Image 1 (cartoon, rainbow, N blue to C red):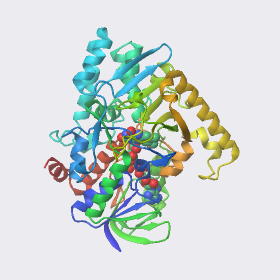
Image 2: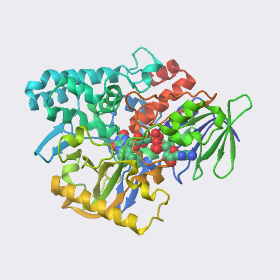
Image 3: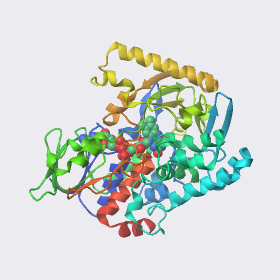
Image 4: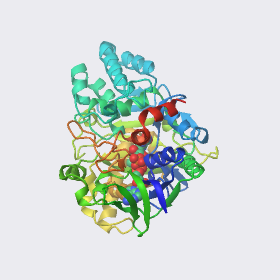
Length: 495
Ligand SMILES: Cc1cc2nc3c(=O)[nH]c(=O)nc-3n(C[C@H](O)[C@H](O)[C@H](O)COP(=O)(O)OP(=O)(O)OC[C@H]3O[C@@H](n4cnc5c(N)ncnc54)[C@H](O)[C@@H]3O)c2cc1C
């Protein structure tokens, strides 16, 4: 069977790219290594509770906002029910030592008012911060459809200031710096390393509005599945792409799967972790500097993730997340090994699709180095030794102790729990080390562009333009724009 396009990896990026290309009438095949589409968005059910894995809340989903426009374009907007988070505080930041908390609202004016009220002497710094972040965000061509089109702007900006450096220039107030930087947890690059522009394209999408989905990530996967079918995309799950073939003239000619099937195609969009791509193409295809860059690019942090079943969704987590920090320092400049207590991000489970009162729970994400479990790197899911189980029990107790100290009200309702480690994440979404958001977009690093030097081979996904569900979908829009023509795609999106 021969296709116009083969898309490798069926996460938010791969499914979006497949639909955008199939909409043009092209014949598209989508390959996913996991047994089902979109393992990271789909989540899992344990102890009668459905837990989301890679989607707790979304930015950019207000009517007419960018993600809403993307979903309309893909024909999915009417297939998901969005539920607004609390406008007066979608993220409650709570510090233990000294004890203080701040409710971070959404809506640009509401954020400015709340921060200026909490830090009256810092109002000019607050306004300067918000203006700069908004300018960076709204200068991006697919975010602002009227903006001048400059493809270079779509790449993560690795020059200029870091978030930490920018905040140092703006203010000496440590609490304000903490509040303005804790959203690095949404992209996994600490303030001292994160380019301000990269931080802006993730954080600002949440500053406009924040929503969850009824039924969580599963409902988004269902909407994608319906549209993949409607546009005639051939989907193969359970056997990943093993190799990309090239013609004698050096352009993509097909993809070979792990089970040995060959699929002809004229172009390929790879949305898997870029490090895995190196082993799928002939060695001579890329210059050695590019291969080295793909192989050695540092990953974003990983995490220990505690999934806790409760009688229902704890009240403290309805319409809001909690960010629990032992002190402000651990938020602004965590050490890269996360040996000091890092902040914990806690999200409630999504409201039930059947609109029934059902058991709920929460997910506590505790950033960790991808090397935290490397002692057991050679083991697979379900086959790990007893010392790994003992280690997990120790980490679980430690996270529970910290949750108890900062948020006893949610711990009081827990009935059962499970822990995922960097290895669980690695094996669940097939990344090299279990990073939360793919590779780091870090100050001074070379960035990966959607178009490679190999004819017909394109990249998309969270490692390319920006992380998060929105970032992954944006990356596919950018990559498909590179293939189909940016002006054409922008016109279609506007229409
Ligand atoms: C714990 C956690 C919580 C998160 N919470 C949020 C949140 O609340 N909001 C938000 O916006 N984002 C969140 N994210 C981030 C978001 O989930 C990701 O950035 C986004 O889903 C990435 O999409 P993607 O398509 O780029 O990658 P992926 O979803 O990882 O898709 C890549 C796919 O490629 C497949 N694959 C790998 N190798 C092969 C192969 N050889 N052949 C075929 N297929 C292959 C993988 O199985 C995978 O399905 C979270 C992430 C994590 C880990």
